[in-house]
Amino acid sequence: MLGGGVVGVTTAYQLQRDGHDVVLIERNAEVADETSWGNAGMVAPGHSFVWSSPKAPMTLLKSLVLKDQALRFRLSADPRLYAWSWQFLMECTAAKARRNTLLKHRLAAYSQQVLHEVIGGEELAYDRNDRGILYFHRSQQALEAGIANMRLLESDGQQIRVLNREQVVGLDPALGHVGDRIAGAIWCPTDETGDPAKFTRALAALVARRGGEIRTGTTITGFETAGDRLAGVATDRGTVTGDAYVLATGTASAALGRRLGLSLPIYPIKGYSLTIPIGNRPKPPALAAVDEHNLVAISRFGDRLRVTATAEFAGYDKSHRPSDFAFMKRVTQELYPEGADYDRAEMWAGLRPMTPTNLPFFGRRHLRNLYLNTGHGHIGWTMSHGSARITADLIAGRTPAIPLDGLVAGSA
Image (cartoon, rainbow, N blue to C red):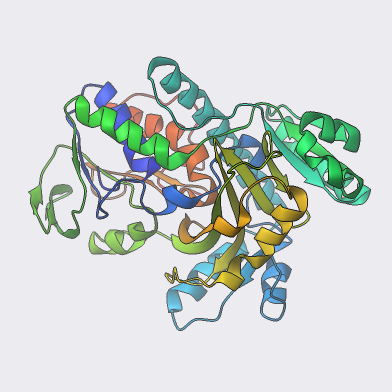
């Protein structure tokens, strides 16, 4: 198992359940130490809309001048950025956006089902909140457009409820003082939240207790092949061999894949988050919400808030400055002024492993014992559990529970 984020660890768990001996290789000192650490924590089929939409090209173009765009493009000397961006733009038609969104929702809904099966049988503490997610809008026009968009997911089985401002405040009284600035919301009652890093680390510990090897602090240095098979993975701590291998290394997958002759259009899209202790504040949010006007997402993990915003086409740079977080902090304080100790906010920036379609890659290419499970983009936590089960099924030669048209090995 190559990769110790939420996708890699959930896959190791599913493979172990199937009776496999598992060895997981992770370059960081802990599992879930990169993208799985700082994301929004939303298990949200209701947030399955792809970024490669008809609106995206103009938003990216504006971002070269305006700094407050949800999608931001930064000029770079990296030629792979421009090659990947061209593929992304080719997916930005209405027809492709609709198709990719429905495929994404299919996987996300199935994945949530698998998550529920896992937590139904295992004791895993990860600050779960199952009260749904509010997607609220600031104007009636935006609300009506949001409802029209959400009907696409509703047609695929997503539960939605349209709320007026009074009902929004009734569901979360912490928003009472800004009720006059909220036109209404779409509430997805079956969406949920939880800390993905806590979940991943608890699940990895479970895998280890049951005999699996979790090799953290281990860097992949090369590969050994024999004909059409992968014979071993060379690391800085020795060579690891197995009957089957799974590539689940997130943003590192493209570079590792090139060593194996694989062309994987996975590119990092930078995201920013704040983790803020609630402290003794009297009015933290009761459930997660997305301010659709500002595209700021707020989740509550027990005694902390997680706030996320911005998708930046900026290469592999994870650096950040306090000014990068000012907008999201201001929006959150406006919504929940008594919700957290904002002066103690922890800043983080990380990289989402995006594909042009916003869909992950599964299955095999030219090496018959190397399986892909990578490229999950901005809702990897949501899609990880189903992706793990699909990968375990493919390795076992079973037919997965959902159709994989448009998903296997990144097929178009």
